[in-house]
Amino acid sequence: MEIVEIEHTAIPSLPETVCCVGYFDGLHKGHQLLLNKTLDLAKQEHLASGVILFDPDPWTIFHPEQTLDYLTPLPKRLSMLAQKGFDFVYILRFTKSFAALHEQAFHDVLVAMHVQTLVCGTDFHYAAKNKGNVDSLKSDPRLRVVALDPFMETQQQKISSSTIERYVKEGKIEQADELLGYMYSLDGIIGKGFQRGGKLLGIPTANLECDPDYVLPATGVYAGFVQVGRRQVPAMINIGYNPTFGNEKKTIEAHLLDFNENLYGRRVRFLFAARLRPEQKFSSIEALKAQLHRDIVSTRDILAKKSVKDWCFD
Image 1 (cartoon, rainbow, N blue to C red):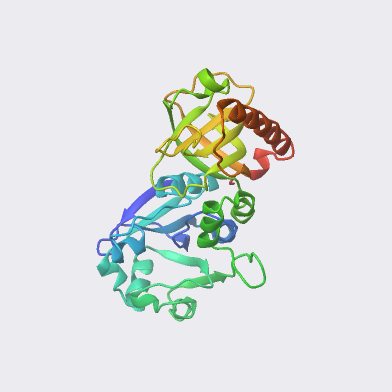
Image 2 (spheres, one colour):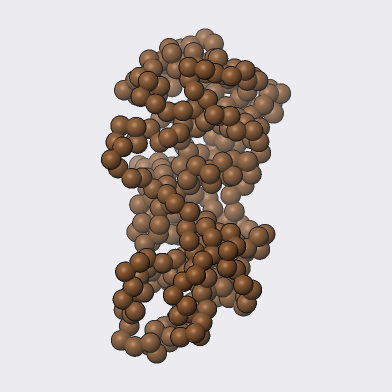
């Protein structure tokens, strides 16, 4: 997959493509509908397939004082799109001048990029003040537009990144996973933690130094997996401040079941399958140890019914 960064005022020479367009944070089931349609049409039309993304997040251009987190930060989004098998990802530089383009000027950009067919959601908006929509796109004879309705969570509410983000922040991981179509995950490097897990509790943990900009699940204990290379190792995952010890820094750590390899410095992925319980403060270390052992049993029970292979983005 080739990644091409584009300024709308200086568009390079590009091949004819079938492209879908959007911000695509989360790459959830609704997004996957668009992605799969794009790949199918590209094959039918014997053209290259592409995805048009915007960077930075349009919200940050007009609200620079706000810090945003994402379900899939851009590097992860690109990795997932490569996994889908796209030929190109076009990253359109989002600036105030780009945001001020009128509908026709936005169409001109697409035409200059040699987009033959554009796939989008029926709720796609663009151009100055978001005045552009599917109808204005279809009114341009130079463009073939295929607009699809996203999957519906219920009859009243569509699947959306904001809904999934809320679920993740509330610890409703199973609901989030269902809308994503795969297990929510965090990527990062295994670093040094407080060294309490193995030495004090007899339950060693791997401490994740998470990549920046992720939406973090609510504090608590989760059943999930740790992806180490191509292996997915069952794990009990904890996110929080370890209130029994009075930590001030939030940690993300996992006890990998039946695993004893050294992971320090390794790049891994934590996948979340279900939340076991909220974070708790215990009266003693022994009480904490007893609960953690119960959590391990619960983790095994839950993961025995879930296959990570059935919950991988493809």
